[in-house]
Length: 324
Image (cartoon, helix red, strand yellow):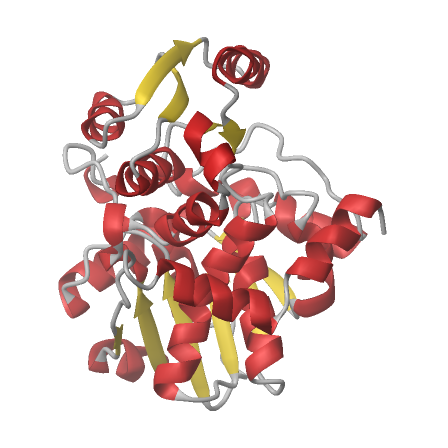
C-alpha cells in the first residue's frame, strides 16, 4: 500500500462518514428509500431503492462535492475549487461552491452537451473550455490552478468525496436496517467504495456488489486481476460509467466489495424503461445498471433484503435510449 492509499484509509472510517453526514446535512437531501411491488414481483426479491436521482443536481455526486467543499479551511476556500468534468460532478461542485459562496472553476471539453454547459453556468461556475482529450483537460486545469490557487476536487479519487458518497448507503441502513446485499453502479468507483465502507462498518453481514456495463467492464477486469486495468474505448449507453477506477478507491473496493458483475446494453435500456414505466422513477441509464443485473437473473441465488443505490436521473429527454 502506498502513502496516499494509507492516508485515504486512515481518513475513511465510520467517524469520517458520520462527520460527512453532519457536514452535508444542511445542504443535501436525505433521499427517500422506496420499494416497487412490480420490481419485487418480477424478480422475486425484496428490494429497497435509495433514490439518489432525487438528490440535488439529480445525482449522488452532490454528496461528495458538498463534503469536499465544506471540508476546506477558510484560506483554501478563499481561492475556490476546480475540477475537469462534463458530467454530474461539474454541476455538483458548482452548486456546493455557490452555497459556500466561493469560486468554482470547471474545465469542460468544448463538445460537452449544451444542456450540461448551461447547467454548470447556471450554478455560477466559471467555465474554461478545452479540447475533448484527457491531456487537454488536465493541462487546462493546471493553468486554472496556476492562475487562481484553487483546490482540486477530484470526482471520485478523493477521501472527502468518497466519505460523502458513503453517506447514501449509511442513510439507507439507518432508515431501513441491515441488508443482505447492496448493489451500486461502478464507474470511477467513488460511490461503490463509499457504499462498501458504510456497509462493512455498519452491517458486517451485508455483501456489496458493483455492477457495470459489459461494454465498459474495466472495473470487473481490474477486480479479478488485482490491479487497475484502465478503461479502453468504452461504448455504453450508461455514459456516467465510462471512467477508469481511481487509485484511492481501488484498495477499498478490493477489500470491501464482494464481486463486480457486468450487464448487457439491452438489459440496461430495458431496466431503465421498466423503472420509468412501473415505478415512475425517472432514472438515467447508469442508475439502471444494478436493476439490469436483477432483471437478468444474475442474483437469482440471493435471498433476503437487497438495497440498490439509484445513482442519478440526469437524462437527455431528446435522446432516450429506447428511441434510438
